[in-house]
Image 1 (spheres, rainbow, N blue to C red):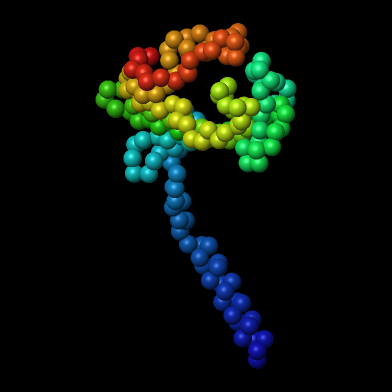
Image 2 (cartoon, rainbow, N blue to C red):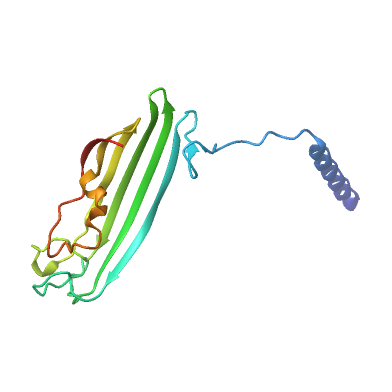
Length: 187
């Protein structure tokens, strides 16, 4: 008797599965709509016509030898304070966002780039023994562009025109200023 009840239950379950499979196809849910207008990697922000792309990278640099100084500077570990000779390291996490949409005045696009750095490679020659530090959060770029007019924080047109001086100049011998600046320029 007990086996008959189990077989009857199994038969009912299989029949219900077959009936459900024979039913109408359900409409697939679109959780993320792809935006092809601005290029690959963009998706629509829900309930808007704005396209968004999110990206970034993690970088880890290791260096041995001099610390780009002629005064025998040395690096020290940030956490323990131990002298590490000329061993240096740096970790960078970069977070980038791009967004855009079409308006009657042209394409409205935005861009942000944020860096988080941590390591024992100090970039200040005034620190004693070149102690390292955590430079924390830095906003590298943030701009809005409408119809070719860009306003915000970005690399200077004078620096980008010459490819940031390339590998020709050594910033230890000939110091260059920071490349980012507030801009209002037409592209």
